Image (cartoon, one colour):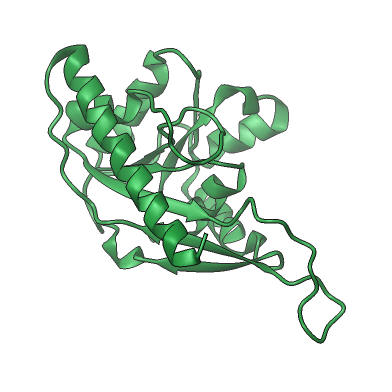
Length: 219
């Protein structure tokens, strides 16, 4: 159980809030971050957030910009030494990639049943951010807890930096878009077939959102 904090056991709420504040401002010197659709984030109730993932920057941006506490499933390779301890204290959950991780799913289920937000990158690993493939974890969490799905697209972190702003000798900041889509209910059928079908709907919906953001950006 998570209590009423929306965080997993062992997390420290004030450290979580401090980390959110740092993440909200950390990349401001480098990026011009534009957030659209933050008002679409459900203010209460369980939410499974799904997002594209090109770099380590996207999770930090979403973590800082989201108007609610969020628990991310983070690859377990990062949970070593002081960094791992810090991630646990701010409420992040290690997950083994490429295989079902019952411990991570159990913790995430507890957060959702407590009415919290769990963020999942369906690609399972950093890639081109085009959501070409997906894993079943998000669909399983939705089926188990009845959470709504919230798609989020982040674009611009891979753009080249270093060009000078007109009239200055300083590099221009790269524009990054954080676009929150419409939350929706996802009906997940029984068995592996149900998970596979729902996962494909998640993947295709997120891919469409990413493509729409790219068109608006002129990519």
